Length: 168
Image (cartoon, rainbow, N blue to C red):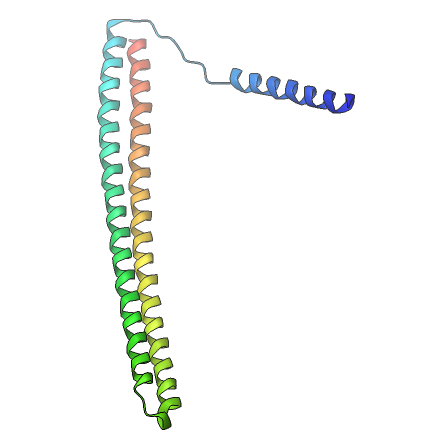
């Protein structure tokens, strides 16, 4: 019991020490003298960053809208494909039921072929609809990533502008 308690306390101590060392390694911010040029550069930076963040939000919203629309369209196409397959199944079953008893096996075989063909068509349409929706989702993720990168670039440029203003 003592060993278990010592292990738990040691683990807790090690975790807290590790957490403290990680937090002390955080990047330090440099304070710049508050000259008129620095203040003006900071204001410009805030405005520029806000503009870029608005653009990023618009791109993200537009991309999300595209994805939502594509998923809805895919769901609709999949439902239509299922409906057609079910209709083909019903028609095949109907043909089997009304078939002459002497020809029943032949009609059942033909009905199974029709159902298999209908299933294949439905699966193909569903796969293509999903693939198209996934393609739109990937393109949307790409647009979002590019917008995010532009925002990060603007932030870096703004920080550089502020430091440049401090040296003048």
